[in-house]
Image: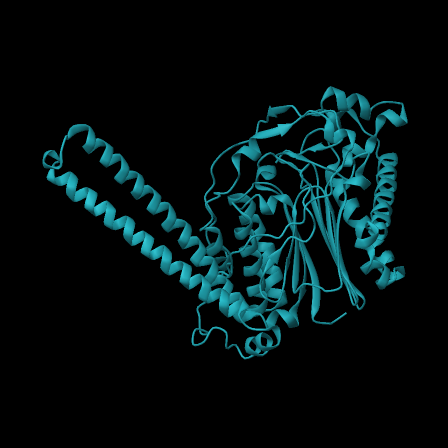
Length: 480
């Protein structure tokens, strides 16, 4: 592999966990050598019914890296690239290896440290009875260690990703486009997720394989994406990270991520947060101009949303005033002068907003044409010469923001019994406090802050935080 490609990961305990002295249940890891790059994120289940989920996530990351190294060492690249046409048989074998390695590590950990009563004080009676059972089959200790898992691997001949549970894998190409290459699983909703501890876990893995490698890929636990109102704002965070790598180098970028994660969880989801990434630094440097264009495009999209909202409000005000006038006046001569003036004013303001929307649409198309309106060979030359942004290259440091919709592959249909069971929602004891976006904490955190302060999320999706699912099927309950 190129010396210019590197992997990195960082994990931070969630702000809500710190407030109640709860351990970090996320884990992350990475591996680099001349033949491969690996990044991994695992997220433990916060519910008290999974008392060793923090250990389980660490064991999952270790198992994933070990098995991926072994896989790349023996797999024929041609077979890997054909795997999608073969129902992902090879990657399924890798998933089985990871599960086998994880289950073995869990069993060894349990044998060395059996459950004790104090450890299970907050566990429900149903789970406590199982964990303390003398019957090995009934005990089902792996449940206590359950977690999600996302991994991505790049080699000289191919790249692939796999995932079980929630969280996001985001890949970024040379045009600054963000996609989510691993299919989403509709079984991961609200506070429910599939898990590595499920009895049918091998059927719940999702896969992706390609002969190409993205410029950068980010694997993030759900504490990251839950901190944003929509995917575009999540992608903007990752663009800002790439911008910092371009302008300040690898070491500064990595330190900035570590320093920023505590800010993100405090002002964002409150959950544990993990990011693992693989970055091709050489190709990334050639993208500086395109990232600037993406930032401009994102701002136009955000302005368009604001103007649209303002226009709707004004139109509603005008409509309400018209109804009020009609209720008190039988003809135009009876309408008060101040009402007529106000109506004309509102009508003009609506027209102004509509005119601005037309301008924004043209501006967006102009930026998109700069990004996509040239062939790849010419784009490469222009980007290297920094010609794509004309005279605007000498910009002050600002957040790297973008628009665009995630490309999501439809998940495979599954017919497992657990998916057919009726889910019964219950209300969790989780704070629904509305949070304000973080302020600058370090010199470079201002870059992140420019993105975050524009996020209307503020930042937790309260419905997601306040609802959990308690059921007897395999899918696991999360509790931020």
